[in-house]
Every structure is written in structure tokens, then in C-alpha cells.
Length: 326
Ligand SMILES: *[C@@H]1O[C@H](CO)[C@@H](O)[C@H](O)[C@H]1NC(C)=O
Ligand SMILES: *[C@@H]1O[C@H](CO)[C@@H](O)[C@H](O)[C@H]1NC(C)=O
Ligand SMILES: *[C@@H]1O[C@H](CO)[C@@H](O)[C@H](O)[C@H]1NC(C)=O
Ligand SMILES: *[C@@H]1O[C@H](CO)[C@@H](O)[C@H](O)[C@H]1NC(C)=O
Image (cartoon, rainbow, N blue to C red; front, side, top):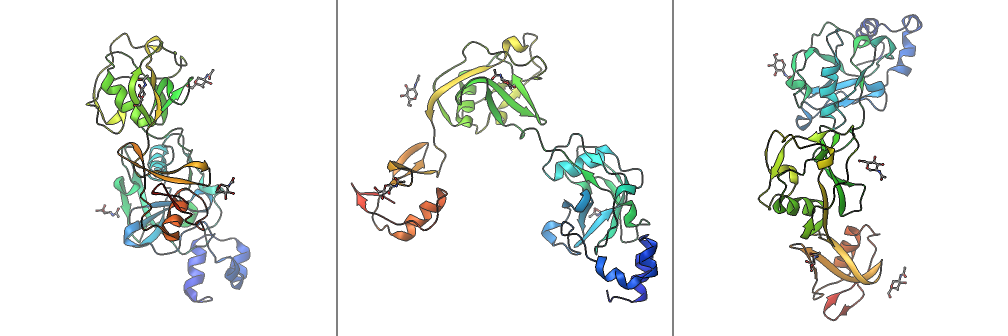
């Protein structure tokens, strides 16, 4: 937009800029720069429907290759903000909607592209909520929606062992961003196998030792697992419910996995020598195996170094006992 055009001045007036700017429209040139946090005018097809938070938490949504803001028409409520936060991978609980009178003036290129947003809370994306989207929303940027979200308290379906060690303890699972305990009722060895593998340990000899009760205030997961043994995560196992009446914190599941660590497919480690030099081993089928050094050179060595998180400027040392060393 050419500076000084009548077009610009009209637009500025509609944005309710302060009177000093009305009086000195040329000064506008200095503020007509969006904050670094705000998106540019355009978005790509692959960003369609995505949301970002600009400066002060102003919500921008990509509709039809343009980033636009949302009109806070008094219908934008916590449930709507919770969908924004969920879509951003943040906690869907406890979002704050910033009162529009506390928002500073927006000087960027985006238009208001959405209003009358009404979410049920189960939507994965804001544009899946009931809304009106058009290029003629009768709102100015002074009424933009801005939210702030909380970090998630845990990652959905993650497992951790509490009050024990890395391979034993009370089992806690993340459900709806809250840690829950699991009921020991109808637990079986196939479940243990999946659980221990998810934690990165072997399950041979796994058992469920004396229960370590969870904090009284912690919820208890209300279903029972029926794993076939091959699932990657406990939560992927078949489940039935509701929980039997015996489920209380005196029946929380406590597990002890075999302390032998499993390896993760494709993981690389250096054995022997010292932490920055040694024989290359690769994880294949949950077992560590060595790599034949035939044909190895500095290129391969550098690739391994990078995978191990070291500087890529490593070098191939030698074949020793037919294994590659870097
Ligand atoms: C815009 O609104 C129309 C009519 O409500 C709807 O069909 C369309 O899916 C919406 N587009 C986006 C990107 O939300
Ligand atoms: C036991 O685990 C809980 C988390 O479930 C933690 O808050 C508490 O501090 C732990 N207690 C001890 C003694 O480690
Ligand atoms: C742990 O796993 C190793 C390796 O598979 C096995 O040799 C060992 O017997 C297991 N430990 C127990 C207590 O079962
Ligand atoms: C690791 O071992 C290599 C080869 O023996 C040696 O050159 C290097 O200095 C050692 N690095 C450390 C940190 O000890």
C-alpha cells in the first residue's frame, strides 16, 4: 500500500489510532511495521487452517492464503480459546482471553477474517468450529481475539514410573494432560511386556511388586488393559471398563521391569574406548550389533558423529577386528 494514499488514511482511521497519528499521518510510516511476532500477510496452502499467536497473543488463522485475525464479538469464550491452545499443542485447560481494551494497536498487514466462533471443545482446529469467515467482517483490529495458553502438564498417554527408579515404580499415565495411576486389577504379563518395552526395558522376569500408593488426590485410570503383547504403547492395547470397585490407591499398579535396557531401532552408540571414540554399534531388532567396517571412510564416520550429537567433523580411525571405529 503506497504511503500517504487516501486509502491508507482511511484504513488507519478505521483502526482507531490515537489522535496524534490522525494529526500527523506521515508519522504512520514509522509504526506501520508489524511486530516481529506477527505473521506476514500471506500464508501457504499447507498452512491453511493453522493458527499462530502473534504479539500479545493475538490469534491469527490462515484462511484462503491470508493470515487473518478473529473478531472478539463477546461470543469468543474459554472453550473457543481452548481449541486454539490445543491446536497449538499447548494445554487446552485454563486459557486466558485478553480483554480487547488491553490490546495495543495492530499495525500489520492482516485483515479480520473470522468472527462468531462457537466451538464445542472437541474440535481439533479452530476452523472446524462454527464460525463466519469472510473478507467483510464488521470489526476492526481493536476487537481482535488474543489468548494466552498454559503449557501442557504432560504429553498424552506418556508413561512414567514414580517413587522408584528408571525401571521400577508406581505406573502413572498421562490422560487429558493429568497424571493418573493405573488399577492393578486384571493386569497380566502381556500388559507388562508392552509397558516395559514402552519404557525402554526388557520384560523378561517383570513383576508387580508391593504397591506404592499414589497421592490421594491423583485420579485413577478407570479401564483395564488387555494387551496382545505387540503394541508399541500401553494405551494402544484393547481396553475395557469401567473399573471394578476394588480400584483405589491401595491397588495402584507398581511394576518392576527387567533392568536390561532395550535399544531403539536405528539408535547408534560407541562401545569401548571412551565416550567420543569407539566401536560403532547399531540397534537392530532390539539388539545391539556391530557394523562391518568394509568400505568405511570419513564420510560414514561423520554421519555417525552427527547422529551421536557430536561435531560432524569426526574421522574414521581404523578397522579393528573387522568393526568400524570412529
Ligand atoms: C468459511 O465459512 C463457510 C460458510 O460458513 C464454510 O463453508 C467454510 O468451510 C469456511 N471456511 C473456512 C476456511 O473455515
Ligand atoms: C512420589 O511421586 C510423586 C509423583 O507421583 C511425587 O510428587 C512425589 O514427590 C514422590 N515422592 C517421593 C518421596 O519421591
Ligand atoms: C533380564 O533380561 C536378560 C536378557 O534377556 C535375561 O538374561 C535375564 O534373565 C532377565 N532378568 C530376569 C530377572 O528375568
Ligand atoms: C579417546 O580415545 C582416543 C583414541 O584412543 C584418544 O585419541 C582421545 O584423546 C580420547 N578422548 C578422550 C576424551 O579421552
